[in-house]
Image 1 (cartoon, rainbow, N blue to C red):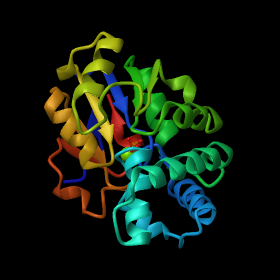
Image 2 (tube, protein in one colour):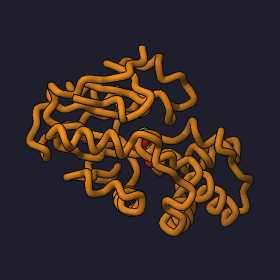
Image 3 (cartoon, rainbow, N blue to C red):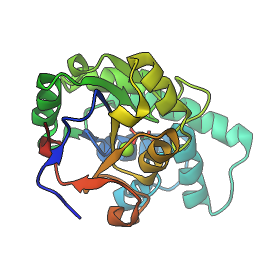
Image 4 (cartoon, helix red, strand yellow):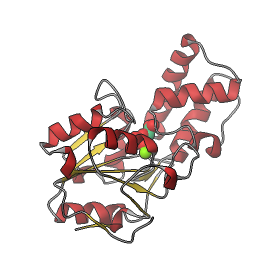
Length: 225
Ligand SMILES: O=C(O)COP(=O)(O)O
Ligand SMILES: [Mg+2]
């Protein structure tokens, strides 16, 4: 059920996902992947193809893209070459084909005004995540930014959430996860964090309402104390 207001007054902190939750980065992914595919003399992907592959980090995205355009699993040499080309292009175009979703700044400001500690936890690599947040003017809201390579395992594993709670010094039960996909929800459930999902974003092509979460919001502006 969508709610027009999700009461955040019982929390000490919020952990916020990046791609699909704060920033619509689908354009960046498509542009960087197609530049990579050009370098490898392979066919292009569309935004629709990419949308269902985003959320499990860049390695997963590159492997899924190669599988999609070639029709078979890529070997390690091709994956390595693709990774080099993809990171080269992504670092250059990062943020140029992306936009902050409506209500994000309002929501982050409200959470901070309420005294909540904020961390950004994404499966995007640190080298992509930190410059993107800075370019979009979102970095100052967060005490910590942890990318997909910050810890040994990525979401949906609970480890990144547990480590982020440790960094914040907050208990999982009083730390709200805000995300856009089942990766965020599964990680939160396993870590013992309550979870709210946005109704926009990328969830592997599946309707988000089918995911086990505490609430769904249409905008981060609905998160209020
Ligand atoms: O797979 C990605 O790079 C996107 O990651 P995020 O949704 O955890 O920010
Ligand atoms: Mg996401």
